[in-house]
Structures are given as structure tokens and as C-alpha cells.
Length: 194
Image: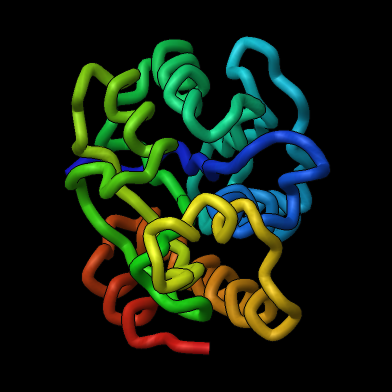
């Protein structure tokens, strides 16, 4: 298993989407950039907000695509091509309906699970699904008919606090991830519940 060299946070661009559940992945990368005291800056060649940070002794590329969620793969592929990164060197943070707010999970590989950002990323990477995922729980509205409005809606105050607490815990596990200690990172993160 390769070392993680880039962390990409999926979301939709624009102020109307910044605080929506679908941007939970972007919130992770934004929090990591703040924690690293390195601002994300618009980078046209990567179609997004980019920074290179030194975190827990590792150089890490951070990216929040400025494309809409269903076109995230273009930005991911551009970053990979420029830095010659392989999919298994990526950690992609995204919102996850099947996990409750206040929890998060790491996952290696797998399908897109209906997530349009992951679907486009898999396609843009030549159907290579070997990238790592950081699944940020946002909960499910209970009905498939409500999913679009739900993910594009803003969480309530308590729900957002729980999501933020899970993101904080994610940041505490990243040193293990970057050191290749996936078991340690998973044990800690998967037992956390805000």
C-alpha cells in the first residue's frame, strides 16, 4: 500500500453550497489547511483550491475541487497527472449518507455507492478504485426521494457540531494515516462518536 501524498475534499463550489452537507469532504481539507496554517489558494491547473503542507512530518498536497461534485474527477485527475500520483496515494474525503453525523470511517477502495463525486473520480482515474476514502457521516433523510435536498441542505447547529467534532477526530488520526499505520487510525476513528 502506497503512502498518502494527497488529500482531496469533495464538495460543490460557491457560497450557496459552502455550508451544505455535501461539502463535508471539503470541510476536512479546509480544516487541515487551517491546522497547518497554510491557506488554500485557487490553482487553475488543478481546477480547485490547492495547498502543499507539511503535516506530521510529511509533505501533503491538499485540494478542494472548484468543479461541481459530479465533475470532481477532472480536478483529481489534473492533480494526479501533474504530480504523477497514483490512485492509491490519494485520500478522498467525502460526505457519507450511510454513517451518522458525528462519526467518520476510513475505507480502502470499493465502489462509488451512488456518490456522484466518487463516481466521476473513479471514471477520471480510468476506473481505478484503489484510492483511500475518508467517509464523513452526514446521516440519511430516511427516503431516497429526499436525498438530493438533504445533501444540498445545511445541517442544524447540533448536527454541524457533531460533524465538526468528527472532522477534528479525523485530523487527530491523520498522522497515523500518513505514517502508514492504517490499523491505528481506523481503530481510533472508527470508535469515535460525537
